[in-house]
Length: 416
Ligand SMILES: Cc1ncc(COP(=O)(O)O)c(C=O)c1O
Image (cartoon, rainbow, N blue to C red):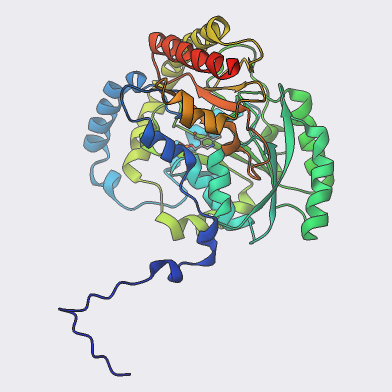
């Protein structure tokens, strides 16, 4: 082959799209990230992101921990380290799972770059192209995004005010077998303060999931980023405590400490650990050593527990503020969940309002934003008249004003 290009004159443009792997066809940039760009306008009150309140981040404690770690652990804290994670932190996390009845030990724990990485690793390990995942509708957008990249398909069961309608799982399972001739990769469950629905799965339903998974010999992925942020009622044992040998539990420091630390963990049967370790090594070798040492110092010094207690009080106040403001300003015909914890509530509006269109044409004009429900439906087969509202990020006065603006826009939309 003769090459006669003059690179000083002809600057060839590569057609990158034609070189991309087929799997990228299913990779979309997260609707929420796109939305966050629009809502960066400071005049817009955004209930769209899932952001914790930055004013509650334990800045001083993190600063102290950084100094302590740098002095005490020195260079070790800046060195490469084990893929599984920092042993003392694994011990702390395993121990903290005992209070929920999960028989974890450090060998069951793997530190990850946030739960989002755990979701991606799950896709890498469990999902063949075209394979199904069984989940609720709506479900966590970030999970849909992570697993779409592995060419997953989804069969879903409906949610009611108590979360996943577990009695529908059998039918969904049959559809999976019919459509693919093989079982789903796993059942994906969001037990506490569901993102986006705000629901909490009662103990009987968790037991039913455990029974169903055992009977059909399926793995369960239990994603629990919000469990610690309970504002009322009693803790309910996780599914992982009922069937630890077939559950992969995901936890994170994102909502209790700070999401910028990018620190989460997987609790899984020891047998599976080497698979996660292999998958993670290919991604990033290990989670940042320094950040693990810092989080460990905060945990071991007993700072986390009182911090989370304060967070609960403050977020409870914000939740109640939003619920009260919606009751005052929203039109008849709209309804919403009353979450017992977490960061979100899920609102439904009368059928002639399409929340995707309404956001662009009305809400943004009133300078308020939310996430349209359709984004949380992996098969885009619902959520047209629903929206997710975050109540953790804005301060109480802003929550009232944003709820008022949204109520006003909805009333206008309904009167036309
Ligand atoms: C249900 C759910 N899973 C996982 C994540 C990812 O969390 P992390 O910040 O730990 O990656 C989130 C974040 O909002 C979430 O809501």
